[in-house]
View 1: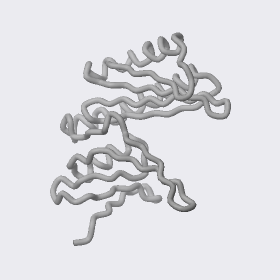
View 2 (view 1 turned 60 degrees about the vertical axis):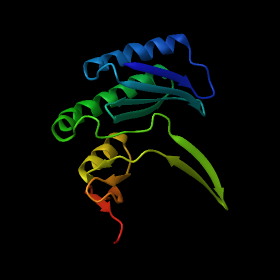
View 3 (view 1 turned 60 degrees about the horizontal axis):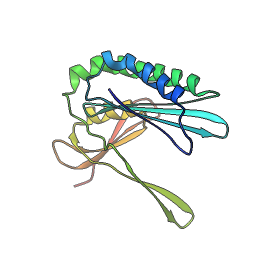
View 4 (view 1 turned 135 degrees about the horizontal axis):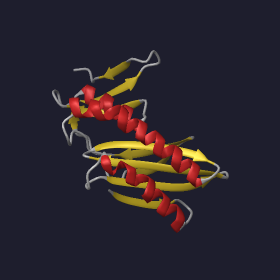
Length: 174
C-alpha cells in the first residue's frame, strides 16, 4: 500500500507518520500493492483531526475522526475504515466488478463567490455505472447523494438517501 501523509497548515511529526504507517499496515490483508492511502492531519479549534482515504481498484473508503490527540483520532479512523471494509467486502465481491468506480486522485476544488453565497465547486470524472453501483459508492463515501452517468442511457443521474432510509433516483426528463 502506498501511503501519503500530509498536514494542512501544520508539520506532521515522524512519530505520527510511523504510527499511521504501522496502523494502516493491517489493511494489507484486504488490499493489493496498487492501493493508495491518503492521510490528512489538521488542527481545528484545538481538536486534532485525521482524515483517511483509501483508493483500491477504483473504490474509495473514507473516514474522518476528531479527538484530543492525533493517536486517538487515528485509532477511531482505523476502526471506522475496518468496519466499512468488512461490511462491504463481500458485497463488493458479489456485485461489483473490479474497476467499476474511478475517483480523481486529486479533486479540483474551487470556491466561487456568488452574491451572499460562497459556493464550493468540485470536479471529478463520471464513469458509467448502474444505480445500484452508484448507491454502493455513495454509501462507501458516506455521502447523502451521488451523481453518476447511467450505464444504459448515458444520462447524468443522481441517487440519494431518503429520510425513511430508502433510496431515490433523479433522472432527466426526456
